Figure (cartoon, one colour):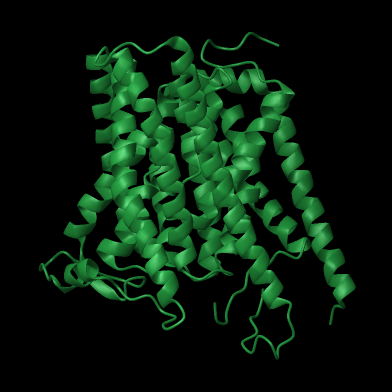
Length: 360
Length: 82
């Protein structure tokens, strides 16, 4: 075999197995909540010795075909609003480009530690505010789910839908309303910025679709897959143009994640809408702790606080990674558990479950 | 009208065919690993290589995984109360 270019590692069987499994769990969560698997994949690849930029690029390259398969699967269940996803995705793409520039500028000015600190602080800020609200709303929706089966648009979404700006209004079937594209622009842009910063734009995209535009949770998480496809495709072209995509890594992860994304998509047909918010909120809050642990490490590297002991730095880094993996596994267990319960209910005699569902 | 057994057999054959295609594609990637990595590392217009491979794998492997879960009896619940 010819020698590999510098940025590409020599793959062993154990690496392949590891990436396949991480890909499966990441795909499962993405198929269910529309995104969320990616934040573990980049550090997982880096733990094998893959340079950061190649890990991000290869992650992007597996993300867009996975999102495509997930979106097509969920479109069969009537959950995808392609028009909204494509428009949102185009604005998100511009956010990705700007976000990448900001990242690059921070890296040049403050070095890798500065860039890492910026990423961790954004993680903590977004996850604490948005994640906290999503989780709170999941518990609220859970107690209300017995009284009403259809989700109602919230106050903010009703206000957004009530604003009429001539020449910018578009009808979206997921919202059952016309909304000005001028509202979608900043939301999409912020989603792209976040995707370029922490690799998971869906942590803003899905809540924005639900709370700011008024999409039901199931449709929001499914439509986010279209957004992820557009962003992932654009990002892949950008990174591949510079030669950073390791196609082997991307396709191994894709092999596992396509099993997962199909399963996660099927899972959405068995659960009540609040489950999407619950899984998303839980993952966001747990990941928040993971990133918060790393803040003192980066502050110490930037000499903004007293230098941390190397051993303590090592412990904090490993604990942070373990918490991220735990977040993903917990999400997967909740999804599989909810599916299992849903299938058990389905298999009961019709007398017990009067509304028998059809399957394709 | 196909019986349940015949339906299962048809599904199994479909799964097998998609599986063979997936095997061919991944074997191709494995065999030409060096060449593919050399191409993609060049950047510029070779970006078409990873994009094309990603689309091909998503189409073929996407069908395979769909058939796989269905054969295992894991199907979506398309209507009814949640």
